[in-house]
Length: 120
Image (cartoon, rainbow, N blue to C red; front, side):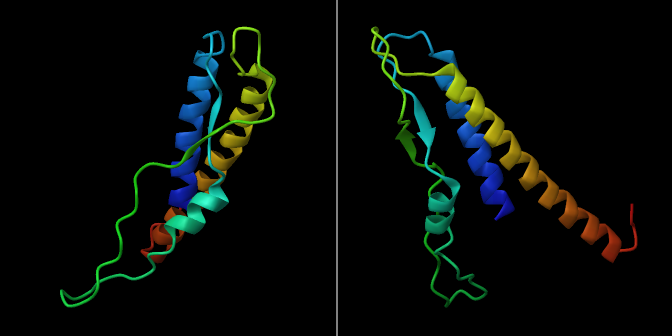
């Protein structure tokens, strides 16, 4: 789950950066990545692991997260609907997601180190 959250945060930060870079581009429409709960729910369906050649192989996961049109912003006269304020709020949300995923990774690493006798 932490890996999925990290992948989602990375993809969303990239899309947000693209929105900010195109804030003055005429006709540009803001984009966003689908919420993590939706993308994780769809990706976690595989569930099975193969340990023998006779086992049924799980379906391969798609590498791309669905990108959707951002909603709720007004369109400027040049056709651009990027709001820098909302993009900065989204960037702060992504930072929180990223930090949470990294803290889970760090905790897991600390547990592994403690289990082999190499604590902090």
